[in-house]
Each structure stands twice: as C-alpha cells, then as structure tokens.
Amino acid sequence: MAAEARVRVWDGPVRIVHWLIALAVPALWWTGEHDQLDWHRRIGYGVLGLLLFRLIWGFVGGSTARFAGFIRGPRTVAGYASRLFRGEKAAVVGHNPMGGWSVAALLALVLAEVGLGLFAVDVDGLEPGPLSRFVDFDAGRAAAQWHAWVFYAFLAMIGLHLAAIVFYAAVKRDNLVGPMLTGRRTAVEGAAPMAAAPLWRALVAAAVATALAVWIARGLR
Amino acid sequence: MKRISLWISAGLIIAATAGAVAAADMASVIHARQAHYKEIGKATKGLSEALNSPSPQLPAIQAYARQIDQLAPQIPSWFPAGSGPEAGVKTGAKPDIWAKSAEFKAAAAAFTTEAHRLDQVAAAGDLNAVRAEFPALGKACKTCHESFRQKD
Ligand code: HEM
Ligand code: HEM
Image (cartoon, protein in one colour):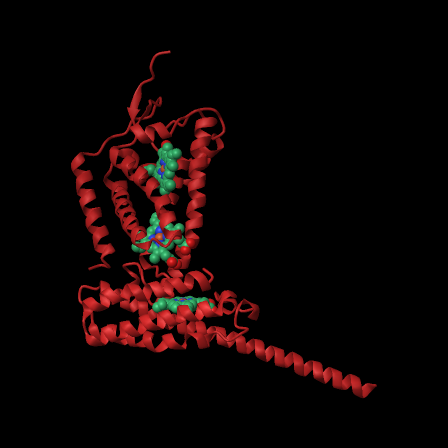
C-alpha cells in the first residue's frame, strides 16, 4: 500500500489553544475544589485569554478554524447524522457537521465558566472575581453557585467529546487525535485541505486577546 | 370521660402549637444568623475589592472593619442549642458546633481578636498595615468554616 497523502487540517493556533485549554481545565478543577483560588484565578485568566483568541480566530483564522466554515444548518447536520454509523470516513477536512456544533457547545461552556467565575465571590469574600465589584455579595454568591453547577454540564460535554473521539477511532477508523497534535491528516477525496491564515493575523489576534484579558482581569481598569 | 378526652385534646393542641412556635423560632434564629453572616461577607468582599483597587478609599475600609469588629463578638450568641440541622431548616451549621463547643468558642474568640486588630489598624489609617493584617482575618473565617460549616 502506498503511503497515503497527508494534508493540513488544523493550523498552529487552533492546536496550541486546544491543548492549553485541555491542560488548564483539570488544573482549574483541582484548584477550585481545593481552595487554591489564587492559582485558580491565574490559570482562569490564561483560559480567558485563550478563549478570546479562539473567538477572534473563528473569524480571521485558517479555514478550518472559522465558525462560518463549520457551523452548519440543521439539514446538513441531520443528513450527516443519518450516515454516521456507516463505516465511511467523513468527507471533510476540518470539523464535520455534528462536530462543529459540539465545538460550539464546548466553547460556549468555557465562556460560561469563565464569565461566571469573573463575578463569583467565595463565601469568605476574600477572593472575589475581578468583575464582582459590579454586583452585590448575594449576586456574587449566586454566580459562584452557577459556576459550580455549570461545571458539571461542562464535564458532561467533555465526556461526550472524548467519547466521540473514541467512537471515530474504534468505529469509523479515523484517528482524530494525531491530526490535533501534528496538524495533518490523510487526504479526503473531494475535500479541499485547510487554507492557512498569515502569521501576522495570529500575532495581531494574540495581542488583542491578551490586552482584553488583562483589562478584564484587572476589573475593567 | 368526655371531659378527660377534651382536656387531652386541648393539651395535645397546645403542645403541638408550642412545638410549632419553637420550630418557627429556630427558623428565624437561623435566618437571622445567616443574614448576619451575609453582612460580614459583604464587608469582607468590600474590603477585598477596596484593597485591590488602584485608589483605595480609607473611610469605606474603616467602616467595613468597624462593622466586622462589632459583629464578631456576637457570633456565639447566634447558635442557641437546637439551631443546628435538627431544626429542619436549611443550615450549614454542623452538629460539631454543639458537640465540640469549646473548640467552636475558641474559633469564634480567635476571629474576634483578629477582627478587633483589623479595626484598630484601619482606624490608625495605615493602608499597608491593613493589607498586612487582612489575610489573618480571612484565615480565621476559613478555619472556622472548615470545621463547622457545611459547604453548599
Ligand atoms: C474554564 C474556566 C473555569 C473552570 C472550569 C472553573 C472551575 C471551577 C470549579 C470546579 C470550582 C469549584 C466549585 C465548587 O465546587 O465550589 C471553581 C470555583 C471558583 N472559581 Fe472557577 N473555574 C474557571 C474559571 C474561573 C475564573 C476565570 C474565575 C475568576 C477569576 C474563577 C473564580 C472562581 C471562584 C471565586 C471560585 C470559588 C467559589 C466558591 O468558593 O464558592 N473561576 N471554579
Ligand atoms: C478538557 C477539556 C477539553 C476541551 C474544553 C476541549 C475542547 C475542544 C474544542 C473547543 C475543540 C475544537 C477545536 C477548535 O476548532 O478550536 C476540540 C477539538 C478536538 N479535541 Fe478537544 N477538548 C478537551 C480535551 C481533549 C482531550 C483530552 C483530547 C484527546 C484525547 C481531545 C481531542 C480533540 C480532538 C482530536 C479534536 C479535533 C476533533 C475533530 O477532528 O473535529 N480534546 N476540543
């Protein structure tokens, strides 16, 4: 068998953001549960920056990073779902129509967690989030409660994320993890490979995301 | 016979009413306690934010520190016997507050000492001294909560 042609599928920024968030979440879990709130906040601000970058990158990044490219209408999703259990590989380089929505859900949950965390106040009032100064103590405590509850929804979604990856590997014989590490996958017939975005855009997006994150982390001042 | 059963029913009604009144009392004791703690929480939140602010307002800091100092010595009186989980009202008060009452009182006393110290330091008007003292107060909240408050 000849070596299969390999094409680019994920650009560097998508991969870096992904693996840093995947590392940060267990750390946030541990520090949140064990009252290490100073580290919890530092790591949380890091995730805030990564998330802001990913949101900007969804509009100006490589073709497979763009929301417009992977958020599909219900008919496309239903069509894809009906063919899901056939052995054939997805005819896309990038997120497939169902995967696109799971990415949107994951990013929305990260956004919700970070957003609630920014307003959360611990019971002792000692480590209030940087935006808690805009709300009273009760609202800050409510944000902390929701921060803890939404985390369970987030965990469930991560579980689904990992189950889907196992499903693709076991049933569809499609290794998704390798490409998320190397940025390349086997070519897909009839599907265009990723069109990369220039480096300067990544640098500008990173600068904007960092500036925004620092401003928010300082309590909008 | 009729008379006796009348007395018995009257007695039962009175006992039930008294019980209900006592339970309602405990509910109001617990709610008042939680409201007091919220006041303390508002004050520490205010202090944390004031100390994080680029332009801390000393009068606000002094008012918060005074409020905590005034509430702290009252803490033991917020926990009459029967105001634990057995009252049937949602409360984070652990039974150990009464089972290990000496330890609980010691935790409350340690907190009162810190609260008084913070108040004095704030009244003296030295912001850096307040910054240095505040973590000790926070530690006193946490120490007591770890042993005596059920996490929600
Ligand atoms: C994806 C991002 C985040 C995740 C997954 C996360 C997760 C968690 C978890 C699991 C807890 C423990 C909840 C509990 O059981 O009590 C927690 C607590 C907390 N988090 Fe986060 N967090 C995130 C971001 C943030 C950010 C950005 C901030 C604020 C700067 C923040 C502030 C807090 C605070 C103040 C608490 C303590 C709440 C309390 O004591 O009641 N978090 N977080
Ligand atoms: C713990 C938290 C995790 C979160 C929040 C998360 C989130 C995400 C998000 C948002 C994407 C979309 C990438 C993008 O377009 O930016 C994604 C893709 C992906 N993730 Fe994760 N992830 C997590 C953990 C993991 C882990 C542990 C693995 C590996 C075992 C993994 C493997 C993948 C793969 C293979 C893709 C590409 C899926 C595809 O081909 O469409 N993720 N993840």
